[in-house]
Image (tube, rainbow, N blue to C red; front, side, top):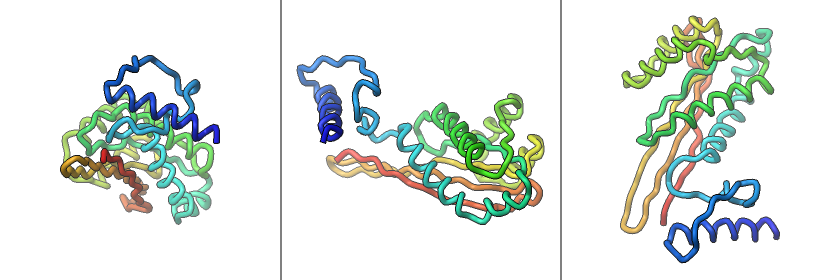
Length: 201
């Protein structure tokens, strides 16, 4: 019951601010305002959306054949490449944090060794440059980057969106797509897609 009241209070503060009421906006901390992180502030992607989609993808990955392969190979080296932003939003920093979240998940739950791309600045810059300039997904290119990292498998992905409007309504559907690629063969060993919807009705 308390959690419902706290969430209601957080939502009323947000709605009052948005509607231009006499309420004077003030800075608050999420830890001091229960429910603040649960309220949507608009149709844009936020941390909760990205974490939800990542959790769904990782849960499917854990029950997939690729985890069984990794368990048989005595902790093969795996690297997580930058996740490509196919939306019109500026979410590059959030996607960078998502890479770290994937790595943390792998370190704690997967039978692999994680090779971090952060230690290879020039390669990371080259990957980001090519991702921003090329259109089609190229598994052989991804495998080549994995070889440079010393990884046997590479995890990569992208975020994309569909946007629809109607009189008085706006709906945006976001998709986080993850795949695992074998560096040796360029074969896609796993792929999955998770989605969230944000709307103003």
